[in-house]
Image (tube, rainbow, N blue to C red; front, side, top):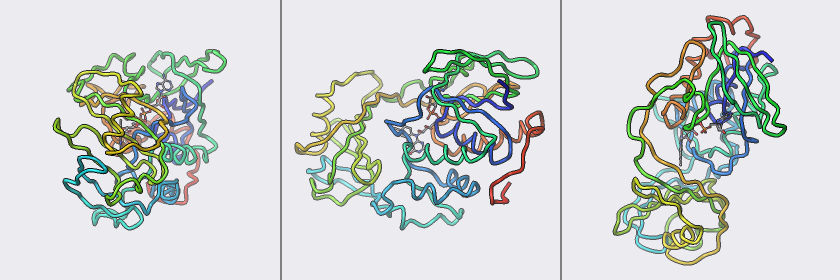
Length: 338
Ligand SMILES: Cc1cc2nc3c(=O)[nH]c(=O)nc-3n(C[C@H](O)[C@H](O)[C@H](O)COP(=O)(O)OP(=O)(O)OC[C@H]3O[C@@H](n4cnc5c(N)ncnc54)[C@H](O)[C@@H]3O)c2cc1C
């Protein structure tokens, strides 16, 4: 199989790159090793710069209507517990009421990854020259002067296949095989904190306490800030983050439930949906690729979407002057923005 650009990883960065290339008329193939379901949304804030890209692509209303409760207050509050003392509060308007900053026509939006990835996939899929293949894993690649040959595996059948591309872009996250194969090192602090994220469901959590609702509650104990609670969809799903120091610890479900009850200040019914231990790092890749292979997104260490989305655009201009330009088709977006 041949494609001008092979993108590895259908997180927000890979999906945005596929959509942006499609919008520019450049055919590409995106492969993702999972089925695409997001059980632990990591990002939930789409920043101003990223929303400006969505505006250019004509998908702002898709983001706004993706599912977050846009009437939910976005305050930050510091507490001893939900049923305890409120130590401080920084008020923010609900997304629907927030105005754009004076520097931009666009404002930030709350849209967690399990809502945002499907929006980006829908955007990419509307271009007939963009293909998304899920359950397909990159196993390795060889770079030649004129292109890249990738070996991929269908995770459902175990079948291996070779794909020839002019360019390969690794958007395959922090534990990237693309970066590892290019032997690109990372500089900075490998561990700031170990954190355990817990997604849980609880209807009407606001009724369990007397505090004004907010987007993020930060729980302060004798040891300092030890946990946070985030309104992940502004309705019934919550993300509890248990913050530890720089030593790794694995928590049992009982310990996690006890920590959630400590943060609440009282017992209540909730359903744990998923648990994700993760490491907060401060690392940046020493190089961003070679002539034919690029890395971007979390893979090169820039957590957050704004900068990788910008890079997706600059990748296009680096590619656009060469081979994939031969494949360019007419842009189908109504926007005339370059
Ligand atoms: C708790 C938390 C909260 C955050 N909040 C925000 C926020 O509010 N706003 C924000 O902008 N950022 C936020 N971030 C950062 C943001 O989530 C990341 O920057 C973003 O997810 C990076 O996207 P990505 O596409 O580069 O990587 P990922 O989202 O990690 O996606 C990589 C994809 O590549 C796939 N993959 C990996 N290896 C292969 C392979 N060999 N073959 C095929 N596919 C492969 C993976 O399955 C995965 O789907 C947060 C991060 C965390 C941990």
